[in-house]
Image (cartoon, rainbow, N blue to C red):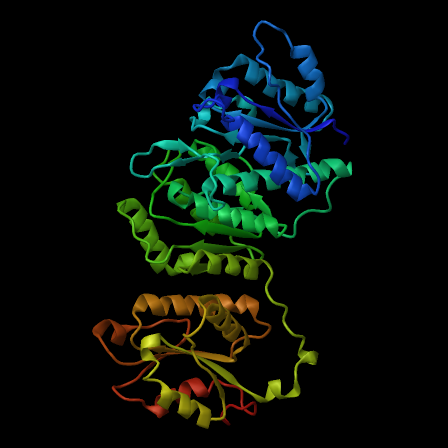
Length: 490
């Protein structure tokens, strides 16, 4: 598709007036920053056009409509003045009409209008033409006062302004490259991910995850604003989830937006709809910031349900790690490491039976007798590791669950919540394995209490141990191991 101008900026001239005489206004700064950053991403300077003239009593509509028909993308800068201006809304409608006439509203599924929100405006006041589009919010909200402050261009490269500008520039450059190719983009991104909308306190973290996914070639949904009424909300989210292989949920301290017709937050509703989408090719990842707590009893109840309800953990991983570790987990889920073919494994692989011994770090000094006994039985013990980078420790844990022949969970200093999570992790490791696990057991050790003494589960053999290590108690567990492969004889 041939265009004369890559980008047209539609804005209210009042929004480009500087409070400091002689200094460039907000829109002029955006223009310059976009020109530089989009140019860096494209490898050449883009042609960006905006009408510097005030319309006044001069009718420029014919001239402008002709130019808009030859523009690649339109960037509208929303503000109170913009939505009040008949001229600005006409520019927006004229562009839509021009691309509709050419049946080119979208390119490879991407809309050719980018909504920059300079000043916070209620969604229902946005022009109808862009009301459903996701916007690029160039303001931050004070959580204490709920007051929105516009982002300014500052020297600090880590300032929110530059992060938002980089997101905008990246998306524009991707669309312009598709336009310039005069053809549809290749078949599409490798995977489609539903990145659930979050409460305001995790907006920056969600943007970082979205940015990371898009840089790796994945398509991120939802691709437009969530509906405000619960029936429409649920139908829309279900449709979006049906197109995805993974849903990602970031849960913060705030309860967040509640659609009309329900008392449940959008965060809760999205999670529960994803939970209901049971499929072999669909997974969920849930992130809680470490040490998360909420002053809102509704949100605190939801957080506790995520942590303790074993039904929620089916088909899902709940991580309370750093955001970087969580992003790494997303990529491992989307692109799991390839399993070695049986005929390419080393011969001695079949001569070992591996038991992954899982314990809490506080039990590290209590398990040497258990490790020594298992070693004497001719098995390879994969111990729990705690030193090193968190991401490396997590990767070792996942690889051990994938490669071991049996799992033995030492239930000592850890509480029942810790134990339930480990059981859930063992269960969910099944889809990453190329063979069933031979045996799963839980060794209930000291310190003891009435609840631990009553503990039972159908997911693993439960072995109650006395005050000291009792080797004979492990006989039922070891008896489940295949004979002649390093395990005990029948």
